[in-house]
Length: 149
Image (tube, rainbow, N blue to C red):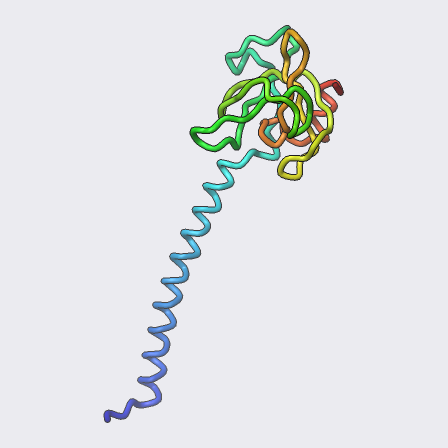
């Protein structure tokens, strides 16, 4: 068996630590990139209602506020309901990125922990989707802009 001097053993150990550090550094960097990508897909806390016309959507009047649908799985649709409840009748469906006119807000059955529901404008009165799927932003701000249903 060949004997290794203490200084050579320290050198081998230092190289091994550097290699492990690089490997874990790459993994950490990959995780950081994935986290940043996930943050781009998630609704922004700063997202907010906007006038409809800049979004290319004609609202019911000049003061109409619109938002986009988000968080809906690819190839899937979100159920639009007759009341702010997950058990209410389904009256329509929306796809991801659809633009909707927000008419009013209320609280109802929570979805993803969010009790807020937005009433979507319709000639026969509002229909409802849970706010978790709408780029309205922070409820402390948008509930002041939109009337309660």
